[in-house]
Image (cartoon, rainbow, N blue to C red; front, side, top):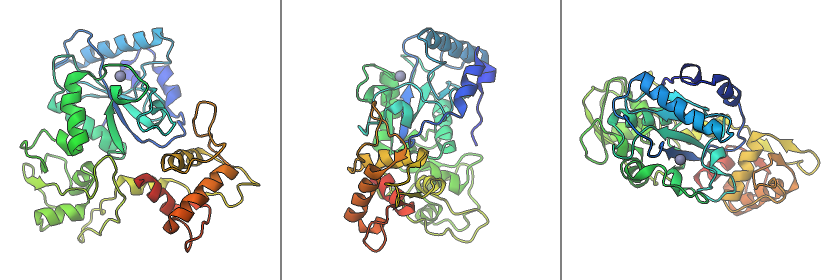
Length: 354
Ligand SMILES: [Zn+2]
């Protein structure tokens, strides 16, 4: 569990954020967008808590002057690895572009993380470790991580050349393990730090306890030592398009077998039943996620998007038809090769990996 410094501690307008915490962005959280504060003056390195708070309050004042509801990021991290909760996962935040062209703007389907770095200094190891902790804490790597300027329809240099070179490029090339700064700079390895467990490490690198055990010939999965270097097995696919493999059971141990983040997402999603959707409207956030994912997978549901192209979360005949088309094309997502018009785990698994 990462710990966060909440708006009550740093903000001059904490009430603004309380209101956004429970906000439903009604879309599937697809990725991460990384920001920087631009070229405002330092010091950035080794800030005290008070210095980082003063900095956040300065950005907050600026964002409020633009008539936004508050500082428009979900989280912020300083160079000493302090994690600040800003809007949290509930609120939509900066980055209105659409990276994956699914019609859902990035401010509604990504978490925006502000790295409080200057134009000259590269992010510190403490900052990168906190970023990895944050990602772990919110369920894992997701489909993509981008720098703000990679979102289509935006025109910005954010998050600056140093963040692009030291954070975004390595993650896009090698996955989140590229941010492992505590170990030797050997790709595919990780050095155990205090507080690590195999399942935590597996989650961080998108692999499983069983794979880690096999790759490192570990005798007792409960016994890993601080300072020990582990080989990180390659994921079957790139981190931008992870699959949802059936996790093999870990060897007998009191710890739970590692679960992929996709499995956890699938677990939390209700089965959306569209069998009678022509007569009865099926509504809700899961319907909105289903609509966005169907569209992204090439089965756009007709009449299911609002005037701004966002999923309307109201599943009617168009959504039912799109789901049926998906199930005809991919028989394993239906029942015995026929569409059953129910979006259950098989459908979510297919769509999340598509
Ligand atoms: Zn930005």
